[in-house]
Length: 346
Ligand SMILES: NC(=O)C1=CN([C@@H]2O[C@H](COP(=O)(O)OP(=O)(O)OC[C@H]3O[C@@H](n4cnc5c(N)ncnc54)[C@H](OP(=O)(O)O)[C@@H]3O)[C@@H](O)[C@H]2O)C=CC1
Ligand SMILES: N[C@@H](CC(=O)OP(=O)(O)O)C(=O)O
Image (tube, rainbow, N blue to C red; front, top):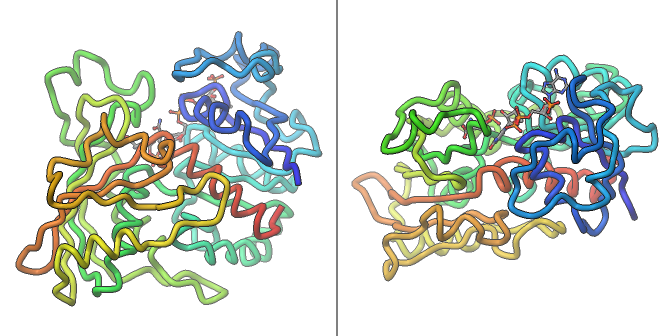
């Protein structure tokens, strides 16, 4: 079955990743690209300052960019991906939902709303059931599904694997790539030869979104997981790939090998963009992995890579990494779109 898709905010950094990842997608056919009024009416090639490392697909280059308005998007588009600034998304997504579109959104607004599924297909696919609650409460014909923040999605699959040992507490320090801040987010004068120990709002997102993702859904509401999460976020001068140091306190006392096995056993999803093995784990023979430059393209950027598993007095510490604009952004929304299609929500 072919699904006709559109991208809201298609000219931006994440929008460009959507276009790259949707090129040659087995079932999704790109039919609409939107951006701001300043870009509307131009061809995509004219409107987008293309910065992705593969060329703009020929058919997309000549597409007309339209306004981010339900009236400008063809009615026969089945699924919209959203990569708008969150304040814009908060204003613009509801009219699309009222008009009956299903929106798989990467923007941070409404991630913690009680009736909005915040989903990683390999971790909490059942939370999509919140769509029925959402439709009842909001009267929308469409549906809104969110993927998490890029730093959150990097660690949550590893925490899910640790939960079999009784996950009590997780403390995390991040080393985040500059692409996470967008093309103009940090200047070269700020970041070269430097590290910035603050990323606005990021720590709160990691601390709350992770508990929702790991929480349980009873058909009516999500109960947050009881794990105590504390994060400290740092920007460093890598281009792509967020690396994180995790310190997890556990009820049980597993060996590093048992932890590595649990991470390797964390199930993948049977979806077109899901990796065959969700978490790749380095053992003791390569204690200096994962590294952003060497490991961010694991599984075409859709996988999680972990390593350096060591015991502590109350549990384990380890490092994990994911590609922030692929697994952490556009790829995460596409995977949610694939799950929506697979489960018949579109
Ligand atoms: N960069 C990253 O790694 C990550 C980003 N995100 C999130 O994804 C979202 C997009 O980020 P990013 O791609 O970096 O942002 P960009 O600023 O690069 O792109 C924003 C997009 O939104 C469009 N837009 C801006 N204002 C309006 C408006 N008023 N009406 C309609 N369209 C508008 C822009 O169009 P135009 O070109 O015409 O201005 C552009 O297409 C954000 O919410 C961000 O927080 C999430 C995870 C990672
Ligand atoms: N804050 C993230 C990127 C981002 O935009 O996150 P969010 O999707 O939560 O807005 C970073 O700097 O790496």
